[in-house]
Length: 477
Image (cartoon, rainbow, N blue to C red; front, side):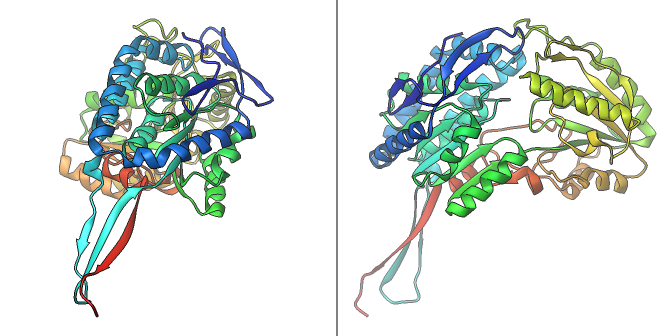
């Protein structure tokens, strides 16, 4: 893996001026990949100043010119595919299926926003005043601050970075401390593609040291954050105080409903992916499976048998379904949820083992919806199976959570599935598909404590642009 020990500001690689020397470690081997000097509040200011200085000229480019830069970005991404794989495996612990997902998705994001002008439509509206024309025009918002998480570091950064820049904004990106290389990998992609200095900037440091400098700085017109609900609440309070726009994609306690008429094999395969993709370190992952009582035992038996066939461990082994947990602190947190489930009376139908930072799958049965693992976001390879006596009870339990990000419903009656999906308090629900679902042109986002704002397609274009009313009086009054 390439060493990324410099910040990327105004088209230049430079050493951070923060007080902390930070380490980037391989979560599977524990190997020190490299250390780097953290960014300071002064570095944040320098990055935002560079973005502001570059934004006017960047916005004035024609859509065709910006599309040409996006084409060059796609070329750079292809050229850097092996380095991208190395970063995802070595600092994020991504198995082969996760690497393939991120590579394909970041390309689809660029392809979706290559022709960003399609999302920049304005309107001409009639006036009640004779000789007056009303124009509602759409313009870039300005400078966007993006804060990305560690779990899907490329996709969850690029889904904000790419549309923001394609629409005429400039960007400052801060990655999570556990995966700093992802942001500088993106910086190298933009650098290779020849984007003007200041259009894209990346700085890495501790959130406790520069987080508020990123969100409270007077230059950015909007902040896009993906991460925990706890941090999201804080960012929301800061941006509210500063009167700036914000997108928050936060935690989830996602559910898969398996109705009595469901195809059990189909539901099981979806649950394998929905629960255990990337060791459950996905905001959309299935935390709870609520199963009709009539088929509960059949589903449990089939699900446990299927999960026993999964291989986990070294992310460099293409046969492994998932690799390590990102950090020891996350391992400790997940272990705490397992211990609470056992102490509260949940029964392990499959008891996993912890080796280093690899936790093999845990499946708990006879879980009630008030247990800790059913109420909180575990964010690991642990799933709760819950028995439902009626459909109404299943829906009630599905909604009995502070979160509302994603969900799934399995039934052979697709129309019935649609009706059930409408009853679930969640920003996204997928009928006969896993809760982990994303398409670059389709709306993405949650409700309740799972966040504010929407990503992808026209929805993110609306977030990163602003509308203005300009009227012209053509005849004297």
